[in-house]
Amino acid sequence: MSIPRLLALLPLLFVLPAVADTLWLDNGDRLTGRIELMEGNKLIFHTEVAGQVAVDVKRIRTLESDGPLLIKTSDDTKRARRIQASEQQGQILLVNGETPPLPMAISNLRQIMEPQPVIEDWVWDGRASLALELDNTASKKRDLDIDVTTEARHGDWRHVLSSEFERDYRNDVKSRHWWEMDYALSWFFADQWFWQNRVSYQRDHIGDVERQIQIGSGPGYEWWNNALGRFETSARFEHLRMDGRDGSDSRTNGLGLNWDYRRYLFGKRFQLVHNAETIVPYSDNVNYMVDAELGLRYLLNSWASLSLSTEWDYVSSSDEKSLNETRYKLGLGVNW
Image (cartoon, rainbow, N blue to C red; front, side):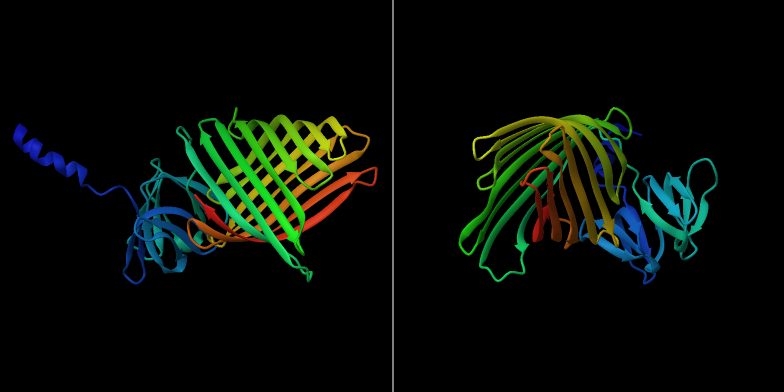
């Protein structure tokens, strides 16, 4: 082939369609995009034009994917290199390379998800929320609760930076005013094991403890992390410094136990969030401290959500400074 003809064909290389997954529906429609997750009779499909779309699995005639997927049935889990479309309605063909394509009925599928990728470059996401505290009292109230969390992952390293600000008024009297900054650096030295270093600074303008600084280091284990969410636990050796408003101060060491649970439900329409931190200090005055959160987020779209959560702060103390406080919040969040 002559050089001029090669030059004439060169522009065609840049207009070829990108590799995409494809769905064929029972009404004859076809969708192209990327399969994110299938669970609960819903397949989450991301298209370039319409964004994230939830498709009823019963309406899918067949589908294909050029990328690897984890396929889970009621009794087995298979890793497919790709999925071929089948001429039989309600059926797909699993391609693994070692055997002929394996036919499988779509009705037998329980889950489809992307395998966790090996992260080489920076992956960044985050969430910001504005919440109001729910209160059944007749007092006049004004609340402001801002929570921002961002996470970056690069190779074996994960950075998490979070901040929270609260200011509440009851009958025009300030009842709560504090803010907190938290940074955690995790190094994954194995597939699921990591070592975490964390520093936290809290400033309270009203409470008995005016300032609190917490520094910790210790191992953790990531039980699972996939398209459905994440669950991990960790234990850290903690150094805790608390400065009282009356001029007293406290320096102590202890053990911190943490867990972080996130789970998508009903085809990524809802997200269940539960995280907690328990600190057992080596102190004669304080037995243990618990800071826990349980919440449910309703995902309006790919970037906005409504949330209903409860927060529990508990301090078991040998003196009269024990604390048992529960708050309920309704918030609007933005994800990226």
